[in-house]
Length: 144
Figure 1: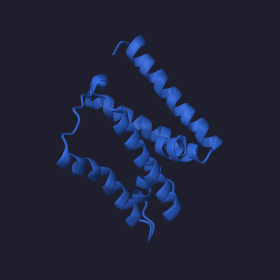
Figure 2: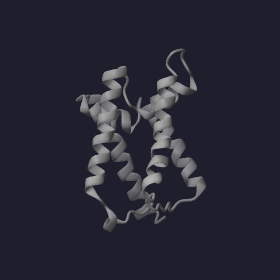
Figure 3: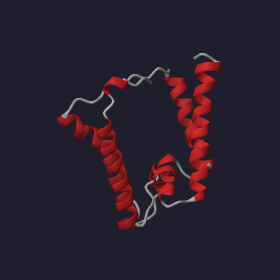
């Protein structure tokens, strides 16, 4: 994937980050739940009575937000420089890592760090370190 840094808009990024933080805080305050995407989606795979509606609403918001955005502005161009097999393997590895890490980057990185959780700090450092190492290995060692 490549980013057009000339089109980077820090104010939009700041607003988006603030909205993510507000949504995570409201979910915790109003529902007592952590806004970790893997946990929310995982709860839909093993549904529990009276625990499905908010999860469906959350996932519908994740999917629907770009559609609503597209009604008012053009979606940014995106280019993924990887084949389907690479994306499938990467997705599976992220899923395995999410299970081993007892949560994902949204749960640990957004919600856990804001609660000053040492476990989330360690998990986020591991996520980021693994990402940095993977990019270095793939781009600079393997030359892919």
